Image (cartoon, rainbow, N blue to C red; front, side, top):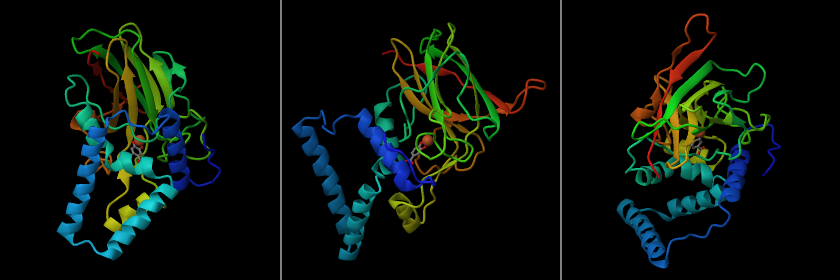
Amino acid sequence: MTDITTEQATAAASGAAATERFRSRHQSGHTSAGTERVDTLATELITAVHDIVRRHQVTYAEYDALKAWLIQVGQDSEWPLFLDVWIEHVVEEVANENREGSKGTIEGPYYVPGSPRLPAEATLPMRDGEKGTPLLFQGHVTSVDGTPLSGATVEIWHADNDGYYSQFAPGLPEWNLRGHVVADETGHFWINTIEPAPYQIPTDGSCGRLITAAGWHAWRPAHLHLKVSAPGHQLITTQLYFRGGNHVEDDIAQAVKPELILAPTPVADGKGDGNEVTYDFVLDKA
Ligand code: DHB
Ligand code: FE
């Protein structure tokens, strides 16, 4: 993957890393869709743009600004960031509309497969004195019929207390705040980590320029990313948020659902610092 050599977590550096990561997981850009499907989708997309041009009397100056911006998104390697912030949530809505179990939400651009495998009572890899409020996140994984899922896997990744993800911002240990935890025979898991900070879309690239030009804000609420799986069940990709946190009500990626908001409480006296919270996952059968 691309080395991030800049000292700053720039849009170009995190975009390049996200682009490389996407390419490594999706070998070719070839679609498995047939000609008819591509014809339908591409024609409707192009026609929707024509309608917007007519409805809003788009000028040549605006058309050229769009052209310059699209070229720049590619040059900044910001397509993964753009798509996952503004489009993915609807793809997820369609993909998971028939699930009965836990709610999913977007994966985002910063998933990395192959994180360290950890026991059911786990502490995520983190730096000595990792900044942030300690968080004990625990729960059970069950099937939709209530059966505990022995040995379910809870894969977790999240930003640090400055809002940065390991492998996408400079200076962080490779697997910082990433791991996959194997639940015990009752489907129970305990994960010691820290509460992440809200995440800001890099403001110095083309996505940032769009946000500024449109008068939007660049924030996602603090979140934990998860992929939960078990044999014979459908994997769920989701995120969990923190009640009362900044931007829970106005996530730029529109990925918050009421069922995904945690309300951690201070850990009981004598059990250490920080907060604790329980969240149970329910998986649909495969
Ligand atoms: C983006 C970043 C995230 O951390 C996330 O969860 C979703 C999208 C982004 O920058 O595109
Ligand atoms: Fe994220």
